[in-house]
Length: 251
Length: 251
DNA sequence: GATCGTCTAAAGGTCAGACCCAAAGTACCA
DNA sequence: TGGTACTTTGGGTCTGACCTTTAGACGATC
Image 1: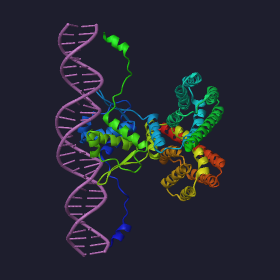
Image 2: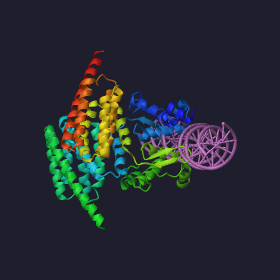
Image 3: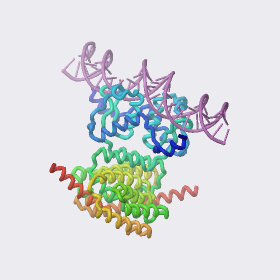
Image 4: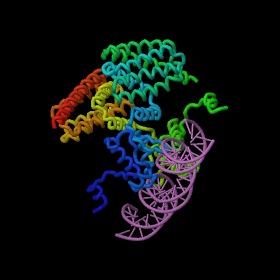
């Protein structure tokens, strides 16, 4: 019986030894997701959890911190404070996507490609599912865009409109992704000489026509127009991006 | 000088008092994202950070825990262990999307809607950007699907293929979202009598035809065939879902 | 001379206990 | 009545100790 025999005979997969805080976090997470802890209700105070779990306060706190970062609890200080259950929203998705985009120095192309995939679908669904209130939000954003004086105002209203369409689609996943993409686009198009009068006029017109299709519940038209809008916007942005890159090269 | 005077004279916006651990986490996060800390390099040991920051070890550890959950560092124990910088991958996006889907009890419809938006785009990009190796992965997955005996095997190979297409698109954002959606679909279609022989045969054929288009770099065909495949799969899944719901109602 | 223990140092993981700060309630006084 | 000071309940931070895991070095054994 040599070592080689044992190696081939018995195979074990690598095992991970979980940390105490992870175990606790997982336990609480499952209970939250299963609905056992209702949204808005308060978890026991830290010291109480210490008694119940026989773990140290450090461990309990690390578990709560994990859940907080994952967006499953919100922690308030002070009397009547504590950890309150809150189901994760689009924000946490947007946050992690933002990290991915920033951290990987993701090519602007990828962001635009994703937009071109997602936004037409949002528009199509919005045309079907929109409420009157959501339509109002879109129209108000359009007015703000038309009246915008500063670049910031324009970009913010622009984001509001695009996110508004996503929300009107009544699809939380698309909404989450769209929020993240908007943030990324906002920051990348902010400090460039890209948004000139022509671009703004084009965007304004495109938004209006998509909004009209959504208003009239014309799903195909909404998707088609959104496709055109996003595509041309992406092409323009990439072109400027190239110009800037070339200018940088020449320095 | 009454209290009212001071109130109207000086206006301050509400301020949030950040926690020490958050401050440290943010500081380190920014440095990682800015590239100051290269991927794979080790952060100073906890006790060293305590000396540098004059914070307690508890605080330092909470900060590291935050970064770990966000996928920005990986912590190894033991000698030569420590916190190693690692740029966030698709996994963290997938994780948070999974929480969203599970936590909000998101309608299966939403998942399928999102797939219908994303997968054709993945296929189109894959047809353009694929490498020979990635194509090989797809073909191997197809073989596994055809040969699969158990439901688990089939589903796993199915997920591998879909994720493989996303990876071949060379778009990290789409890939991240696709991984999350696949996981969700995997778990929801697992315990149902949905995947019968007919469905499997259909899926096999559809996968083959999409793979062929990707192989031949025919972007339009890839997108078109993928659209059809995802759409019919979604329709079938929803139909079964309805049947199950009805059966449950009758109990 | 390869293999297996053993030891040691470095690093994270856990613990117990103290104290600080914030917020909400309460009692008391002008 | 209304404001002020105290109390209570919660999270936030600090300290210092000890446990556990791992890499590497050093022998001891077959």
